[in-house]
Length: 285
Image 1 (tube, one colour):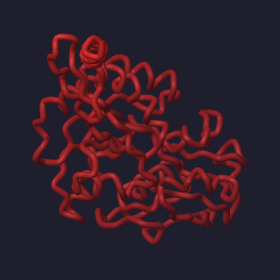
Image 2 (image 1 turned 180 degrees about the vertical axis):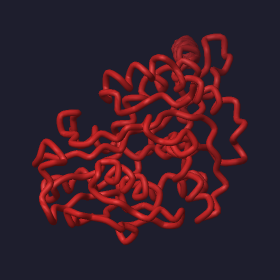
Image 3 (image 1 turned 180 degrees about the horizontal axis):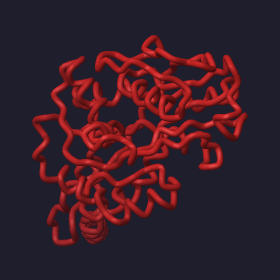
Image 4 (image 1 turned 30 degrees about the horizontal axis):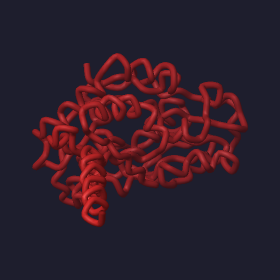
């Protein structure tokens, strides 16, 4: 009788063990019912500078899940971090900057990183929550601008196009000290690009980069002067094309090229219009 009981118990253990085939192990890898291992899931860490950019990338993330690729967002609080993180191997790609900014970072810090695909050109519009026209600006009013070397030059170019100032663009660092004419004595407040929108309650107006403007809930109706992308010289505007960036050693990575191709689609163009009110213009064509 004892032998019979032991035999039944042994059979139950064998059956239970067989039932475990195909379940995930602690490492996350799985096996098929036939014992064949499933394809490894590849993780690609993508650096962004704002949460809003996820709107453009979410469809791509879903698309690549079907290819056993997990695109994982890493969102940074300002522009100074994503390139350092990429160069150090903390992330695999980033998408937040234009050529001018990238080239300046490479020259300044020696980062071995390169653009692998164009994305968009974004307008740098002048927004206000207090006035509805630049004609309403009063003497001594404050305007917030991004303080990094590349975006501040463009911000001052927008203010010059609006007829508010004139500045001396020597090709070197351009700051508020470069202003040569300022008839309304506008006070230029230089802050990190991520902070210009948050200053709107305290200043008359602010020049806000595209992604940050949407994060702050700004609308077309808040624009008191629109940055006209078509007004720039073609050679100049090329520097403001945003890009997807990888480490130099990975610039020919086939998976990364697939990700770029998945971004450069009509689906993304449609999101520019529906979600960003046209402040983004496709730059890959």
